[in-house]
Each structure stands twice: as C-alpha cells, then as structure tokens.
Image 1 (cartoon, one colour):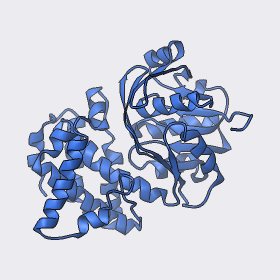
Image 2 (cartoon, helix red, strand yellow):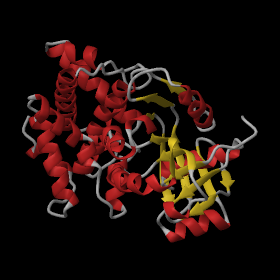
Image 3 (cartoon, helix red, strand yellow):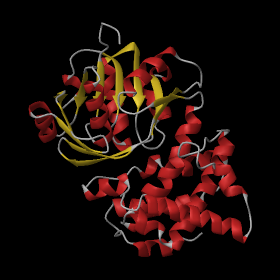
Image 4 (cartoon, one colour):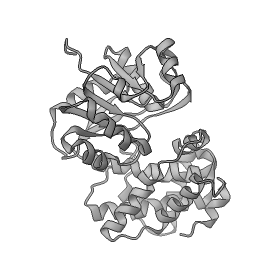
Length: 341
C-alpha cells in the first residue's frame, strides 16, 4: 500500500457496502461510509459495524456520515453500494466530491453502469460483479452468508491500471478478479438475479421452497432463454456463472426430454444448496422498500424492445413484481400459476 492514503468513500451501509467498508478498514485502508439512516450512522460511529457469519465476528469503527455532502473532501475512489433504485440519485450528488480522474465502482445488482456513465462520464465508471452474499440484520449489523469473489473491469473492456489498485482494495474483502469482458460478467449475474430475485418476490419464499415448485423451475429456464437471445442481439459474450460452473449456452442448447430433465434437476439442486436464502429483493420488500425489478428483468425487457427481441416471460415477471411493489398483489407461490410460458 502507498504511504499516502487515497480518499475512499463507500456509499451505502447495507449488507454489501457495510461489509466491504469494514474489511477494507481492517486491512488498513481508510474508507468513509455514507448511510442516510441516522440510527445506522450513530451505531457505526459509536460502536462500529458488527460483522458475523462466515468470516467470523468483527467490530469495526469507521467514519460514518448521513449525506455525501458531509464527506471530508474530494475522493479518489468511490464504491457505490446503494440499491439500484437509488444509485442514479447518489451519482448526481457524487459530482460534488469527484475530480476529473476520480473513479466510481458500481456494486449494484443489475446493470447500472451505462446509466451511471451518462451522469458521471464513462471514463470515471468501473463495473463490478459482487459474487458473494451478506444480509443486513439491522442498523450496523451484517451477516456474511455466502463466499465468493469480486470481478472488476472497465466499460471499454481494455486494460486499465486503476483496476490493479481497486483489486488490491477489494482483495481485503474477497478475492478479486480483473476481467476484460465486464459486460459479459455483469450480464451473467443479471440472468441469475432475474431468476432468483424476481421469482423470490413473486413467491414470497426462500430459494429452497421456490425451486421445489416445478412451475418456478420452468420459468427459470424461460427467463434464461430470453435473456440469452437479448444478449446475442446486443453482441454480448455472456460469461459462465458460478465461477464457471454454469455455461448458459451449454445449459440451454441440448434438446429432448432428458435434456429438459437434466436442466430441472440442476435448478432443483441449486435450490436445495441455497434453500434457506431469501432473495435480496424479497428482503427489501420485507423492510418496506421497492424492488430493483427495472434493473433486472426490466433491463432484459427494455433491451429486447431496442433490439427487436420478444421477451414475454420477462415482461410478465416484471409486471407482476411491479404489482407487488405497488401493493396491488400479495406474494404467494400461487402467483406462479398465472405466469404463461
């Protein structure tokens, strides 16, 4: 690490932002964290962030403020860890603390990088896939629930010396890989989130109960098929998911009864392995917040329209989640039966 500390901010003290800031601080970096909730700011300032779960127990004190305007001066690196629904508003506020050579790393679910680049400038934005899980257990309380990696890259898919610096910082949290196809990495995770997060909200249950439902497994496959058709039209090379374990093209290519059975059994095994996990969108709804549906299945639908690809399953999933968001529909596995494939 260089003697002169870079100015670092983490925007968002939820599960991902809080854990990222805490382990960076433990490794010797000096991030400031922004959280709009007064109770969380007071907890972090007075007693520190408390981390439990797979990485053991830690209590980490970090400078916390409620608003971006309260940060101490301009920042070299900003890790944007708000919900996708809040990231564009945060990006506009960030302009006051960025220099022309500052870097913003997007840690959102979904694909927000293009929209962020429109506000911040493409040269400032780096994409990042968060391949591990954590749960917000309350103000300043975070449980690490699944291990994994970060993947970082720039939107031009070119070598970038900033990536080495970002990699060093994020290695404090989990191993970090640099990709020259970050859009393909982001889209890969988008597909999984469009299945798990959205259907988790529609069903209102854990992943295990969701994927025990045969209709849910069929919808998973149709979401993937449509998403890959859109990716082809966008000329995106979608990377395998799960550390290379799930190649979407191979998964969807085989035909016949046995191929279909193999697909459904694979999805059922995933459901069993992660049976106790609630989707992050379901957790958001339980805390009275809106989902990120427009940045997940909504992204697939919108890009499908742009590129002339029909996405009826994703359209229906998006519409149903928006009804739940607006309080016009209750979460229930019965909702799955209304989705026409």
